Image (cartoon, rainbow, N blue to C red; front, side, top):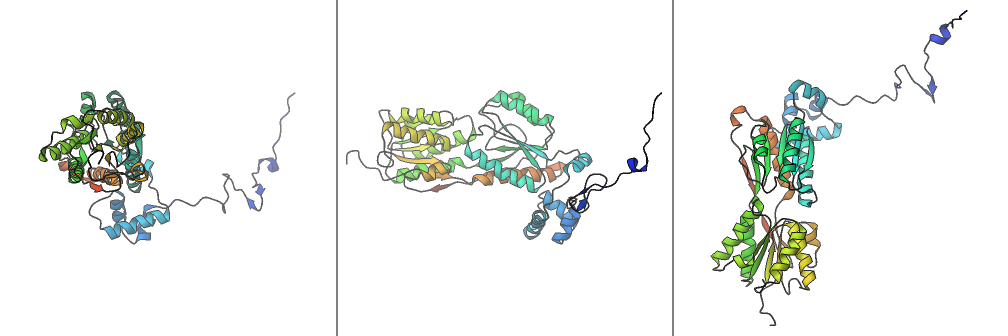
Length: 376
């Protein structure tokens, strides 16, 4: 004989169980402790004293918004801690609000500064960034482009290896999303953020010539990528205009510190040892400094030295190193603005790539001195 358990009213009735002085209500949350609802775009508009459309244009970095209004809206976004509902927006528009960024060397501090600046701009516009490192390998770059396109990113920001595969370029040509190239030239319809490295090397070389140096060396990165061949072009141009043959004083290779060490030692141990040297990247400068220490050379007494790109290494060296500087964070900000402008552009603008070229400046420190005859 089976027995049944009878549940009376006392067993079936759900009563709140007090915790401290605050009863929990059905659903497990307390009325007093319930998390506040996240702010809406309407509240942002009301807080900033503008229309919904103006807030939307600011969040999408539309050029038609004045700077004072833009700042007022962004201040309201920060004060209210507003975050767009990306899931709902993606369902409406098909956009993922993510941008893929492929770089060649994540250990390079310059890329860290570029990515940080770009990510900050993207976050304000409601986008997130996926960063990938190709390690300068064309096959790895192809795999990363495929993976990011499979994730349906809304755009790509690329610093490609020395030689990208044709398959990669074809993927980029048919991707149908905004593409921004960082200091690279490829036969794809992408916008570009470039640096005038050629002018920078002309200025650096002419500065050393004015100090009386005629044997000026250049340790340069790969000539298959734009920073390498434009720096080389600027150096050759300045030397040839001075009536000097630059070729015996040129060494080219990769951008790594190890390559900088190898190339600098080869150049500094050559029969025509230069009295001044230009390191064609911040990582090459690291190798050059190691070479001078290995060979027991003093800067600037034995060798005047100029680097490219201003990093803590160049500023904190003893003596501090003269450099061809550029605004690194502006590269990231500019790339983001080009992407956002492209997202907001009409279809008729899709086949008109834009090129933004940023300048350089020579930051003079204590690593160079006037040429003096050895032993004088």
